[in-house]
Amino acid sequence: MKDTGRDFLVYDEKTGVYREDPEQAVRDDVEKHYWLHVGRTILKDWRLYVMLIPMLLVFLFWRYFPMYELLGSFKVSDDTKAVSEQMYSGFSYFKSLLVGGYQFTTMSETFWRALRNTFLLSFYGLCFGFPMPIILALFFNEIRSNISRSILQVASYLPKFMSTVVMTTLVVMLVKQGALTTSEGILSQALASIGLISKETAKSGLLNDPGFFRAIYQISGVWEGAGYGSIVFFAAIIAISPTSYEAAQIDGANKWAQMRYVVLPSMLSTIVIMLITRIGSLLSIGYEKVLLLYKQSTYVTADVVSTFSYRMGLEGGGAGSKGIASAAEMINNVVGMLLVIGANTISRKASNTSLY
Image 1 (cartoon, rainbow, N blue to C red):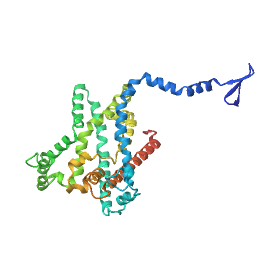
Image 2 (cartoon, rainbow, N blue to C red):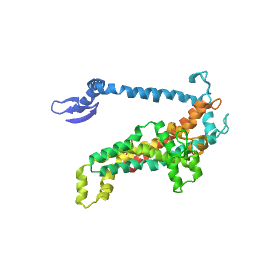
Image 3 (cartoon, helix red, strand yellow):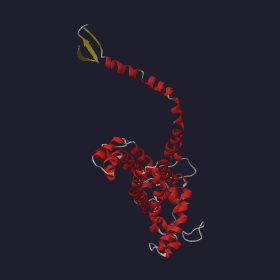
């Protein structure tokens, strides 16, 4: 039997006739009944697809429908008209933010300050906040008592389940004098007593000093998210085969050597994937926490793109303020998308591990 190259037909030397290649016949049958197989699969697992409906609705109403409002970045803001009916303004809002111009002559400086603060807060969070869940997961793995480990894990998870308002209120009570406290916070008193800050700074409140905002933001962020973030890394650790530890012990590896040559390499792919997703949100700082902690006196280090857009879009800043707010968020999101693509490309070329 020889292949003649005629439309996937093969020549049978015994019978002297051409017939279709059996493998091609199987492929044709699969392609012909593809949607039938898909329908049967959906009917078989219909309960799982029903459970997907709430998630799809969330993405539809809170992710895809709001994209329509991005047209406001290119339209003259007019509250009396729908976005589709507003006049086209081109890239004037983007020009105002990046280089100045239009009716917002001083907007560029404020936007660049907010963009710089957004990047610095996220970068510090990446440097100090990303390694902490990994370190915490490694410590949990070394605790031999299941009861003790469970108690410590639950205690570290709890701050994540507090609302942002409660968490920021606790921070305020610790570091500054306010409506809920009659004197400077306990943390401020402790820092002043050992000479790290002055008495005047402690009395006025650390949150009123621009120089302390980033440190307070990062420390509270680590306290809030380190325990919850360790879940993924701890799961990667417990998935390591015990035979790997046994082989390392036979070779004479102590605990530190096992951690270096067994644990960390085994969870490297998880670390890379989580790092890529973290870089993707590098410029996506939520405005809630910053909004609850910052003051006008700390705008120089605390104002980020989200709070800048909030003030422009909701509090108002003249004609075109909503267009400016929409354009600022679009710039922020585009830069974040480029960071994800760049980080994923570098990771794929360097370690053959990537998000997509």
